[in-house]
Image 1 (cartoon, rainbow, N blue to C red):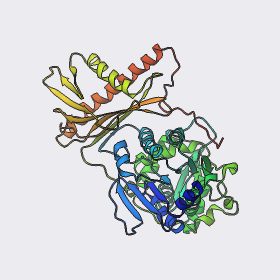
Image 2 (cartoon, rainbow, N blue to C red):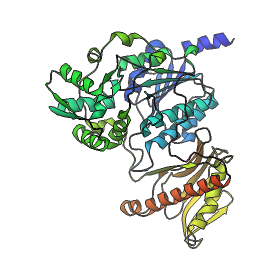
Image 3 (cartoon, rainbow, N blue to C red):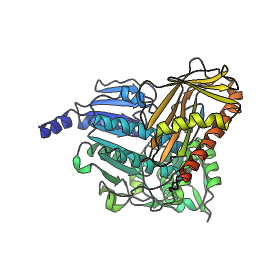
Image 4 (spheres, rainbow, N blue to C red):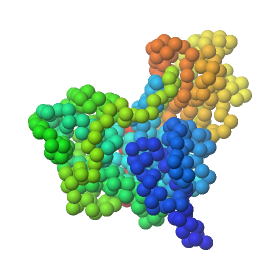
Length: 485
């Protein structure tokens, strides 16, 4: 019986792709339909897309909302692909870093998959250097991996470096540097070794691993050719373009200067460029012992360029999604006192805030309502209502339903969640629309909120220390496996 069910799933699988509107996601869909002609694909994106194939159903889904994911995903899922990275804008005002955003997104998605008893989750992350001192960008990739593994969903992880292709963000940056600079000053990071990979190799691995138990709970590195330096990649790219370029190497890393001039020359948003440049100080080479395929041994980077489009696009097109006007997302990672949960964090916040801001702020709880008032209980700044669904010991949601600081059409919410194997708490405001004029809000209420949350994080740290138990206080710790085990 079990064998028959597995055979049926392979013939008519239900497939979910998170991040389907991205560069990899759009290219993956036709490849999956080639392998599984009778598959049903649910393609998730931040905005609604139109499908020309009845086998593909596009759905707009806010992955920051656990409830939205639960309502959007089909009841039965055989394999889910996770191709989401959040270095682009998510709101008009983002108060937080992309690593914390990625952590929330992955945690939400994995929670729902665990409830659906999904057969396999496939995640495309990034190559990692053999060091514990990682950039925030690479730390974030590791944290996403750990998040998926903690939920016990059978997971296949692929790690890839620079992906060659027409819409690949890193490849587009390299192309623009080569095309726009006849003379290039190359700092020391351009001498770092890396292993690029072509889009076809990535898609082949993602498709071939689907619904094959021998690939469950494995981590693979993807390579398209032999390792080479970034400056060698630029030299070969110039040769392929038929462009004469001079490359002058200098013995400095200069990350700050590099970030600035790369963003300026390529017209690429700094939110994308800065994390990528910070990751280049260590070599990122695919491990031969963890290769999904050995075909790369016979290829060179120059030969891969024949497969890649050498067209350049506007840097701003890399972030196609534009956040709704006058929306706010504020996310802070906090230490979690040992043995505590999200319900404790919420209740502690409600009791701590009026003490910390006395006599200016008063908190009143009435059944499922929580009101934050200014000086007098009648002057309600924000009214929050406990969520009717989705609350648990590890996730507490308060909907913003009223108050003179909340817009009439605000769908905002305050969430407290527990993440990363109970190492951290996350306090987050999502989709908040203030009533104050935007300029006034940015330089008053927004700053006050951030300072208050930072003070609350220190308060939680003191509680943890009072318990005389060790706690990791860094923003992004690394305590993850770097191999298949």
